[in-house]
Length: 101
Image (cartoon, rainbow, N blue to C red; front, side, top):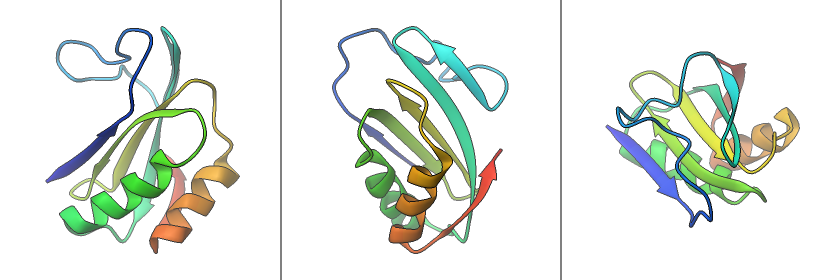
């Protein structure tokens, strides 16, 4: 189960036609940056939604895809996010940010 939150973009998608945002944990894409984080405690769609909603509220975030099965959250943003901002959002949702995946 996954939850993805998109906000309108003025540029093209950061993801390939296969839905992959590329290799590695962070990269610069056309129009922004994509980073993958590991979040502890997500077990279901509700968890994914809570984490996605909080991270989507960070200024500059253009999309969030949370996956409870893997504990990974992929975040695309206009510019690099601070780990502190992501940690605060994950904490607010009631989960634990382990770090970048």
